[in-house]
Length: 383
Image 1 (tube, rainbow, N blue to C red):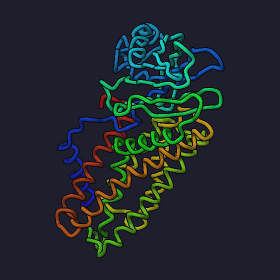
Image 2 (tube, one colour):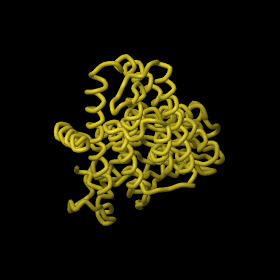
Image 3 (tube, rainbow, N blue to C red):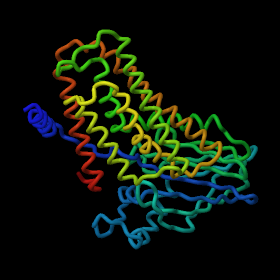
């Protein structure tokens, strides 16, 4: 009877909860690389842009069958070239000299990244002189998707630097003679923070672990914890386990030691959210929840890795990106914890928190997770 009531409650919650956004998966990213040859004023560039983003921006699927072919991409080549060149400006600087570089697409290919098919545009940027610094202005897709990011990698001889360009920071200046390591670190810290805050599935999973931190399950019901210390210890165990786990798989994946298909990873993340919500509705694991956080955190780490994997960073660049991104993720998580714990602890004795808020929020989260899981597993983006 209890299980039947639980299922009925979730069904009613799903019917009451209208989902308007289904894109809690890998964010929209493009990969832009610039290389300065040993001599001359010309830069070699490559820009990888997801076909799904090009479809959203200019329409590439000519027959509307949901499958973008090479022929369809090729037929839209002039429109694609115009789109990308309009949203990228490279300015050269050397001493007191400065001026714009003129970019021209030389070749278009397709490639497969962890999250699907991409158009690969190779181009040259001809500068008025050999630059010592570059300022890159990036604005692709910001008018359609404010969360879109451009992941930039610039190399000149032994110098290699990476940064993240977004709507709030669309430009960056890169020295071609010395690496700006602190600038690179700050860029990836910021990206990590925004990734966790914009990753609704990661946030909801974290909340399913935090909600029970201020209560205990006894006698088949939730009761308030006796002290703040007990709640903080539980939160510390859960968050630490989650952090260690996702840091482990993030590092393994970015270093090429572990790889799973993007659809499987994103579906798995949705499953973790669903199971976390169900466990709050019908507690099966209410002791040692840090074990759950660790096991499921391994899957979330693979999701985090999707941001960095396709950049192809190496050496110190990879270390800085990993450290910065992971630090940013932890800072984003900590902000959520600092907001929740005082509020949850203050409300833990109330009938509302234990009998209304916890089951209702769990049911709504479970409903949304089921929605994501279905859409991702079947590849039905229209759900």
